[in-house]
Length: 142
Image (cartoon, rainbow, N blue to C red; front, side, top):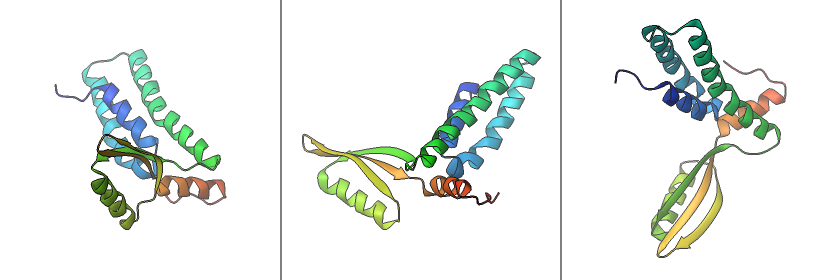
């Protein structure tokens, strides 16, 4: 197939705009252009183009609004990750991430058999800080 599906584009954009100041720009242009070319090459009607545009807009705006509301409420935002391995390997990874300056919040830490299973949120400081700065009256540097 020549194209990635429209659903995949929307899913990618929803992910990117759940942390808009981290991934938004990197994702948006290429996926919108692909949608434009698909609409033209599939010879979509005006109604079909409007529907495509609405779905694309929802994929961008809805996750961004949800994230910014979380920031306004004073909550951290970020990506959830789960790691599982031997306890010493998991500990080494967590120490390595901390040494890299990655801010994390451990959400769950338990054992399953001989493995340590840790779920953590990698805090998105760029999205959190830019959104908070905007709420504090600073202009966004675009």
